[in-house]
Image (cartoon, rainbow, N blue to C red; front, side, top):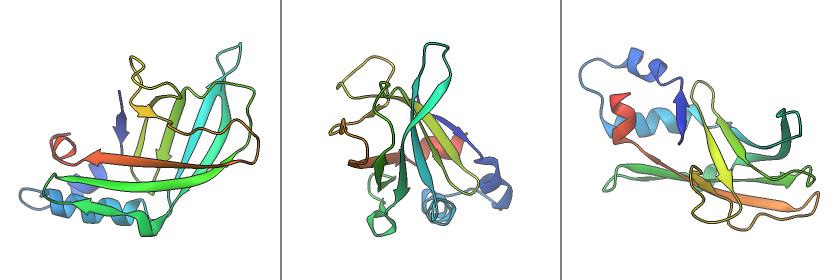
Length: 138
């Protein structure tokens, strides 16, 4: 399950009832220079960084009808000696993290790495989608 941190910065700046449109605009600014780290775990349960991705700013898309934002991050594989299990996307204030898998529909994973390369240096691209309504309540 995806976990969010830092949304209190958004809520502290709001007067009155916040809207999904206001949240989408604030997140666009917050994630302007964001990155994503994909981790595996070694035999001692320590997190090992496997890939680092950066936001492709031209990919930012706010879908107001469905109250969500979508964006794409891309980067390169740094290590291939561990299975990707966890990810973290870090903006200026907001951070979200969860479990990932290279196998579709794995129980407990909220991010499917569809075309995860297996070679060091290979390019990786990942699409993220954030539902806005649940974040207004947090």
